[in-house]
Image: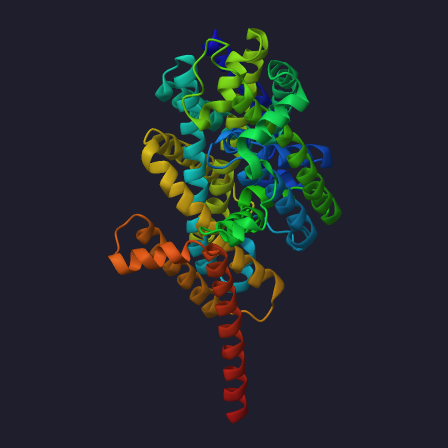
Length: 496
């Protein structure tokens, strides 16, 4: 029965992908596949933006953080941080990027620093997308394998094949339409399940009270002052993580792909801001399910507790609600994962086609060969993500590292290139190299490879917002080196 539901969801996504393919019929322009020729309706763009953030990792991770014995609600930062990320992006970044009629996020760096620098900055964006996609596929395979007896490798391969198929057919049109399907599945599946879950916990008030009794101050959305004054303070780490989610969620092609596909600047800004509100509202459902996982009397239900915190969402849906509702909830999880994967592989393939292959091959923007390259890129990246997903143990550590890279490398580059007209290519290179060296050093030391004195230094530094400090250091280097270079050039001209 479970396989039947999963296959049914996959078939629904393929059908939606065919609709996107029909929308592309008669168009030979790669812009149509990448950014819908800037004709994406506001309502469709809004749903697509919200659904892109409310993906499989978002709903599963939210429930996991709320349920985790060492985290609790206070460490469930994604709902409000991603909401703020979309709002900040809409207020300060969506307008300038859409106004310049770019095709990808990397066009900004191509315009300011040249195609080589844009190609260099493609690498952290590519790796971040690739490992994010792999982690999501691996999570889907592991969840369905553990709880429903499905073969994880089979789930991963089928899901990847379906996503590659409909993304190749219709590009952004198929992806956006699949986002509508995903949003509907989540709204239907999880909202129907939540009342049954709350009833099993003895009502909403009882669920909240019991959760508070178990977690204490960890049941708050924001930490108390004790987080900064305790013997082992964790407040700065909490703040660092929050800033990473807020500002590190902006420099992604999956975000700007929808911004650049809208009709106008105002539509891009409105879409981003309202999607942020929706992102927070929908997160209340997995938050409630995560709390229920803590409060439910599993022994009285004659069921073992969830085998791991990452399984709490599908586990509660399987055991705490009627069978029909459980299957609908399963379809919501599968839909969320499929819709997360398609956005990532399309974004990376778009940047490769437009910012790497096109200038290298010297092709015009309307050359039909670009569509072929884009489709091949989707297939290759999708296959690579599926292959990595089968190596789940290595994926998560690398994805965690790459998500940091986007924050410490790409965000200062985006801010400096977009907000400061005097920055130079040499300064941008200096900032990027500094970010890579510092983040790479922290990555190596965190795995215990370095000597004992460095390990002690890492333990001290890790209590501070070190990711944010690296990001700010990179931004400062870009600005200072640019100003120094500018003054030196002025002096040279004056002497000449």
